[in-house]
Image (cartoon, rainbow, N blue to C red; front, side):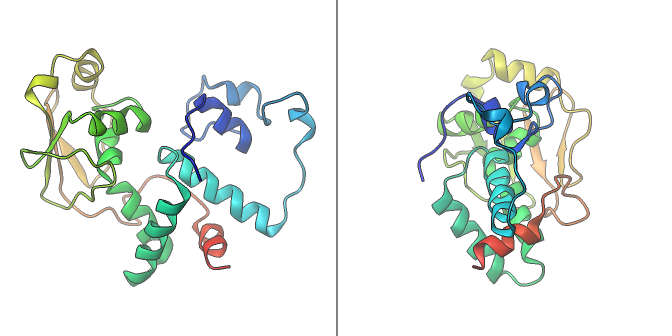
Length: 203
């Protein structure tokens, strides 16, 4: 499945609300699919439809991860032992692009991925340009020196998140942050119906 590159609010309208919780999203004013017949397209979903929708919401929330890659992440989550749903969210929250976003260096998951792709991010002082790179506890994520004058990065540094996830730390107005623990069920704040997602991939 190809990566989605269109307007992000259309993704939210497909599921009836802003996936990223932005109050000013067009999806909050028009909570129905885009298009001429969008208002009339809401209907009761089958079990499969619910599972598919929840899986799509998860993919979209983490930046429109491609289906093949999401399947690989799910398969890895299933082999880790314990709760597959929690493992799935842990792997997604540990992605480098997600960590950059959570640290507040980028305003959206999409811009965080761009920052990683464009080599603005260092992991333990080494350049890493792979958004799916798995960040481990103890690893330090920082902004490359030559990238620290980019306006979007300056804004993120000067306006850090009000509250970081418990598994991350970052000093105020600092160009670096650190993963201090593995994300788990108690510290991951996002809420998805992981049972539906497991059901979809277990068909």
